[in-house]
Image (cartoon, rainbow, N blue to C red):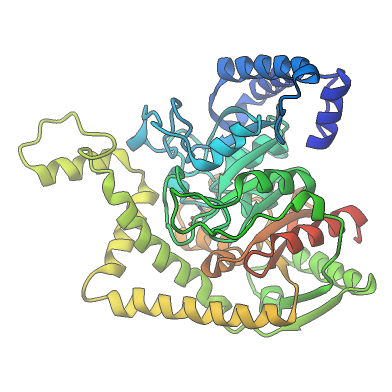
Length: 482
Ligand code: GLN
């Protein structure tokens, strides 16, 4: 029976002939069917994936004589969040407003995956337009956590996290604007990596808040995350915000060094919303790190309570502008009601097409940008963001890594926070910082709560120090300090 461990082991099995790409695809199609109740996939690209697997098996058979390159992700089975465009395939941002929309081009990250031989098995459920922390905002029903289906998987990339957790693909691509890769990774017990802002092209990623959005990776091993990042990172002429910095060979660097200077913000561990057991286990783990020869120091961070408000002012402002294109004329669902007036047509189309949370954020974003309130909210939030950037630069002059819990609680029950938006927003308290300042961050599945659910340690590093971040992560997961 096929058992996926790492891409490297899978490639060894393919080379030894004990496994083929089509066998792997069939295995995952079975797994997807078996776990249908979790609602992780909105669509499975069954025929596509099979055809591609057969072509890749043929390529491997003839490559021994022709020497054709197999690609770094040869036969790797990837799921993609329903916000990434894949030419000729539907993409809806889990929204009714884009129901039945077919992508006319592929995201640059998708092109890069395909160029290295990956097989895309389907598009994964998420919160509508990536807005949410529980996956309950999808227009196509919630995703359920595979460990306990009465609980949420986290969001917004819930389907992508559950697909890796419950063995429905090898790795997934999600998007992370304020924690949407790390938070569901934490709730599901897998690795979730959000690279630095500008490390991966956003071309073909449906925008939520463009100065925060970044494509991220779900995997079961640090080495797989490193390999996929190495493929999809790097310059792209279609995204002017992507960095032209050379992409290091993350995979080869993994074991070369271990960054040792670790800081944590005192306030993250004394926050009243933090679950007591998460606090205790995290604190004990930090002591063990110290014992293992790491420097671990507490530093003051008086701005913790400003993070979530700053994040929501800025992201809703950007969202209100990004989502204005979906008006039933330029893009998206158009009402079938006869309308004499253009404004009424826009209004009704958007009312029918957008769900409640998206509407709430468009209204909030429009408000903070409005003439009378712009300075009080938007400008103020920009100033806080700049302060955070300055503080972060200073911090990483002294330390290699910054750690804290990924989320203050473990996965909660479906429906638990439905009527309290602010409570739900607090699930993002530890994750939004990395997006506000653009640094790379990862959630590592290190812990288990007595309620049976996993939870993670979040590690952050200086902008574009993915190499150090991955080396540190590998050391923590491999040496099993705890
Ligand atoms: N939960 C956060 C929000 O709702 C993060 C979303 C994300 O990262 N896409 O905005």
